[in-house]
Amino acid sequence: MRAFYALLLCLFALVAHAKHVVHNWDVTYVTTNRDLNQTPKRGIGVNGKLPLPVVEAVLGDTLVLNVRNSLDTSTSLHSHGLFQRGTNYYDGVAMTTDCSIAPGTNFTYYIKLEQAGTYWIHGHTHEHNFDGLRTPLIIHDPKDPNPVEKEFLFAAEDWWPITFQESLAIIMQQHGPGYPYTNPPYTLINGFNGSLVEPLHFEPGKTYKVRLVSMMSLPLWEFVIDDHELMIVEVDGVATKPKAVSVVRLAPGQRVAVLVTAKPNRSMNYQYHMTTFADYLPPIQGVYPQQINSTVIYAADAPVFVPHAIPSEPFDELSIEALEFMPTMAVDRSLFFNATYGFTSNDVPYETFNLVAYESPKVPSMFSALTTGEMSLNSITYGPATNAQVLRHGEVVEMVYWSATRVPHPQHLHGHAFQVIEKGRTDDATGEFRRRVPEKGFSPMMRDTVMVYGGEYVIVRFKADNPGAWVMHCHFDWHLGQGLNMLFISAPQLMQETLKVPRSVVDQCTRQGIKVSGNVVGHNSFNIDGAPKPPGLIINRFY
Image 1 (tube, rainbow, N blue to C red):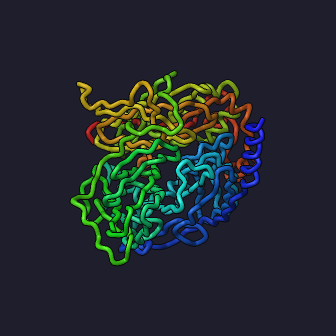
Image 2 (cartoon, one colour):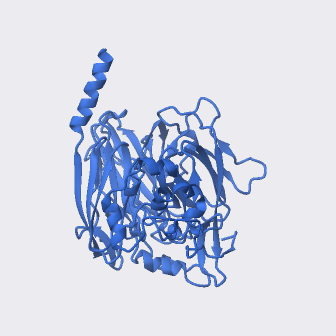
Image 3 (spheres, one colour):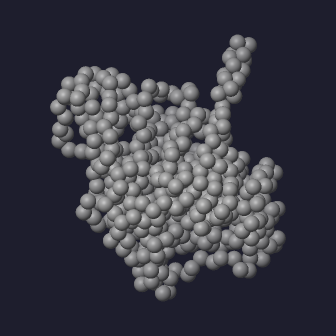
C-alpha cells in the first residue's frame, strides 16, 4: 500500500510540474554571412534572426510551437528524434505526414514530450535545414540517472555562402555531379563563428554534462578535452551504460551526451577541440579539416597542458550498451537497402535506395494510409517512387544498410530508435572485418541515426510499435534532395482506428489544393495513373 501511495505522489508531482512551453516563431528570410569570411546569403531564421533560440523543456511538458510562415514557399518543422506517438501528423515531413505550412499562414505544433535527452528541431521541407532553420531541443529529466550541477551545449552546423537550391542545382547538373565546394562552408558553434567559442570554467572535482548536437548538412566533427575522460551516457536521446572514451565523433543528425569529471586541483588548464572534417572528400584548405580550440580554465594563471596528439577515431556503437536492458531483438522480417548512386540517360545524378530515387506522392502518405481501408496494406497504394514498405504492428524489422560506393550516408529513421547489431566491409569475403554485438547478456545501444561509411554495411533492428507513416533518409541534405529517402507505413489499419488528425493539419492541405484521401494520386482504387515515377537510372558502382 505504501508503494501505491508513493506511486500516486510521483504521478501527481509529474502532472503538477508539467506545463506548456510556448515558442512563437515567425519563419523569415535573413540575409547574413553569420560573421564568417563569406559572401552573405539569404538564410532562413526565426523572428528575423539567426541563430534560432535553443528550446529547453522538462519531460512531461507539452511543446507548443506557434509558427507563422513568412517565406514565399512552404515550410515545416521536424523534431528530430522524437517518436511522435499518436501524433504522426506533427512529424513535419512534407507529403508524408502533412502538406507543410503554406506561405503567409499560421500553424501550431502541440508536441507532448515523452522522451528525455538531446534532440533538435529543423526544417524538413525544401531542406530548409541547410539554410539555417535548425536549433537544439533539450528535454531534461527530473530523475536523470546522471544528475549534474551544470551542463554545456555544443551544437555544430556548417554554413554555406550559397542556398540549398543553388547548391543542389550544381550537384545535379547534367553530365555528372558538379562541385559546390568552390563556395566552401565554415563551422558555426551554437550559432556563431566557431573561432569565437568561449572557455569552459571547471571547478576541481565537479562533474559536468556536455551535450553534443550535430546539425551539420555534410561534414563530420569530433569533440575532445585534453587529458580528460569523456563518459558517454546518452546517444540520440537514449540513455546508455557509462562508456569512457577520449573522443566523440558525430555525423549529421547525431547527438551524444557525456559526463566530464574535473581534475582534483587547479594546477593546470587544458584545451578542448572541435575538429570538422570530411574524409570522403579532398581536403579544402581551412575548411576540411578545420580545428576549433578553446580553453578549459581551472585557474587564470595556471599553465596550459600540451598534449602529444589530439585523438581521432570512429564512434564505436557496438561496444556501448543501452542503460535499460533489452537483449538483441529476434527478427521477424529482414530488409536490404543498397544506397546506390546512378545517372539518368542524359547524365543527371541521383541517390537511391535499391535503385529507387524518391519522389513525393500527390497525396500525403499518412492520409493514404488512413483513408484507403484494406488497400492501405498494399505498397502500391503509396506509389512506386516512395519505395514504401508496409509493416505489421509490433514486428521486429532488421535492416541491412549497404554502401558499395565510396560515398557515406548518415541514415536517419523517423518515429523509432534501432539497435545497432553489426558492421563490416562490403568487399570482405573472409569475414575479417565483420564485427557484431554479443549474442547473450548484452543490451545493444539504440539510436535513430547511424553512419554508414563508403564501402561498408551496417545492420540495425527496430520494433514497428509506432503506427504511422515514417520516412528513412540520408541526413546529408544533398542526398535527401537527390532522392535517398523511402517510406515505412507502420500498422495502417491500427492507424485508421486510433489516429485522429487535427483540423488544422487538414486545412493546410485544403488551402494548397492537396487531396487528403485516396491513394498516391487520390483514387479510391489501385489505379495509380499519374503517380510520380522514379527516374530510370544507369548505376555507377564506382562513384
